[in-house]
Image 1 (spheres, rainbow, N blue to C red):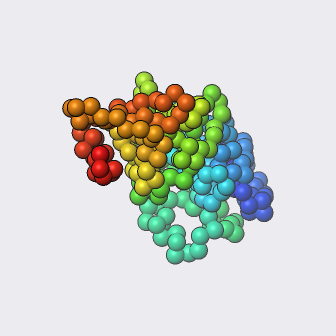
Image 2 (image 1 turned 30 degrees about the vertical axis):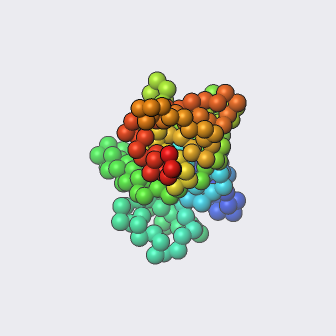
Image 3 (image 1 turned 135 degrees about the vertical axis):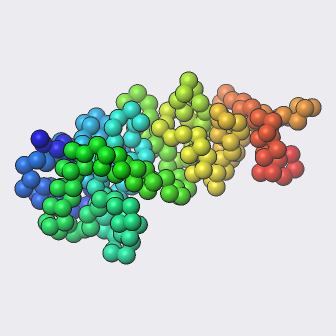
Length: 255
C-alpha cells in the first residue's frame, strides 16, 4: 500500500533534498507540495494526503498554524515536522514522541520516520495516541495570534487581526466581520478569545468577540446594559451580556 504524502517547505534546497530522498521509498507517493503555509492548507484540504512532511518555519503560516487552520471536516494527516531547530530545542518534541526531522535531513533518520509512519497508519491505537500528542502540542499556551486564517467559498485568506471588527456565531459556524466583507473561520470563539485578548479583543457575550479598537460608540441604557457600535459603514451593533458588562467596565475605566 502506498502512502499518499505531501511536502511543505519554503527552503528550496531542503525541499528538493527531501523529495529526492523520498524517491527511494516505493511506498511513498508524493501527491502535492507547497512552499508556504497558505498553499499548504489549500492543497492539503484538496488532496487529502495521509502523511505530511511539514516545515515548522514557513511564510504565511508556520507549521503549527497550518495544522490549526485545517478544516475540521477532513482527517488530519499524520504529521512529521521538519525543523532547523538545534538539538536542545527538540526536547519538547521528544517528550511527546512527536515525529520530526532535523535539517539537514539524514537518510537513516528519514528511514526511521517512514517506517514509523507506516506503523502508525496501520495501527488505529497508535495513530490515536499520535493524534493526542499533536493535539497537546497545538494546545500548549498558544502565542498571540498574528494573523487570522479566513475562508470564503473555496479560497483561503490571511487577515491581520486589526482588520477584524468582530467574530460571531452563525448557525454553528464562527464568522469574522471586516470593514466590507464577512468570512468564516475554523477557530472556536474561546480559542480566539485566548489568542486575541492581548490585542484588544473582548468577549461581549458567548456568541461574539469584539475588537474594542474598532468600536466607534458605546451606548448604555438605564438598566446598565451596553451596546457596542462598530466603525463599519453599517454601524453594526453588538450587544454586551449583563455578565460581560461588568467585565467591560473593568476593561474601559470610566464607563
